[in-house]
Length: 325
Image 1 (tube, rainbow, N blue to C red):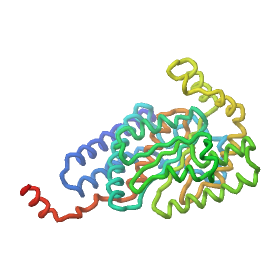
Image 2: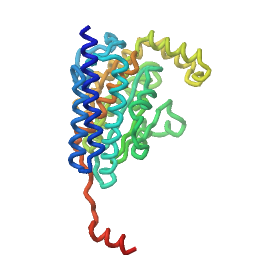
Image 3: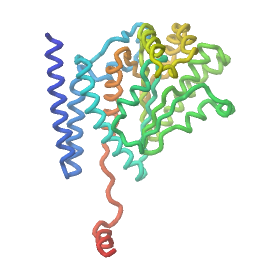
Image 4: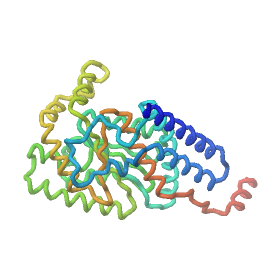
């Protein structure tokens, strides 16, 4: 009964947020539109019992192996509520993304890097499809990192990462990242320990410099249970349309699950920093992990407090020339 009551409250708040969004879209005044959009975003954030940025942020003493991958911390609604939330939040993300891109065109250095990590079948691709469903392709860059190819192996491991970083005003989404260059040698011993151990400090410095130059970083680890992964693998094997998703190496990684968990635990402890923290997001319920990422992204962009760039030409003179042409 309490959950039903909370679900009704969530739906009511989402409807109010929708009304505010609709009003923002109808308004012809720039300041009013931005104010109404901010109000809608704040309403969406209010459906959470505690903000995901606070609740899911890695902290000392948090153990990856003890997290409940099937939980929905901070959100007491059901899947339908989550999908309503995500649809409206995606529209607000698109609004802020266009705003950031416009400012980037005018030389503003703000940009955003989203790092998605997780075991195979944790839902990284689905997050990209759902959270970014309404954004303008201009201003969004997605890149998946696999094993380094022959050309990449000739360079420092951060070389291929730097090539895919967001330009001013852009959002880059990394499906896997520089952290693979720590975790994989940690698990498989492909480099001497002193080599990959040194990378913790290198990555921290790399991210510190990025943030100092105007790039916000959101680092997400999708916490998937081994049983949920098994179900997703079987689903792939049962559906010819999904055969392409499955690779025998997925089972090799699954066989070393415990080693991966320890390697990632070390990553969180050594690279979750005040300027680029890790968020550990339960991912057995994919609708939940999607709304968490949507919330983190939308609030990050809202808090940039951007407005539309001013016109950099004489408007009256420009209109005169247009009328005369």
